[in-house]
Length: 174
Image: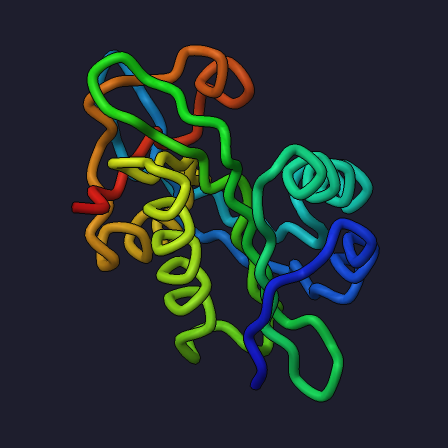
């Protein structure tokens, strides 16, 4: 496996990712209380579609952010993007915009390594915290919590509006 920075022109390689993901349980707000609910759902592509993610990837890199990929014999099997724009009133945040690993490469440490690379990059951008909008599946939230992410103290309302079911999390870089 080779981890390396990716250029904006490589965004089309996102099509190599097998985003198939079975989601048994997801967190939902029910009667004002956060509850784990069985949804028994299989996603077969990246949320919002592959082209949407390619566009976000290109915008991140052309806007000064960074993209990192994990390659197995020149096949992209995982990638992550981190924006360079700092936001927040109480802390200096940057957004971990995307992190995906192909189905057959999950639970091998690739996501963890991509996260660490992006956290290091966020520090280089001058951020104090890495901010992320995590999908609400039980497995996704458990993954980020194992890495040390916690509920964001300061919520970015624009990002929350994009998907109210997402968990707004942060990772302290200090």
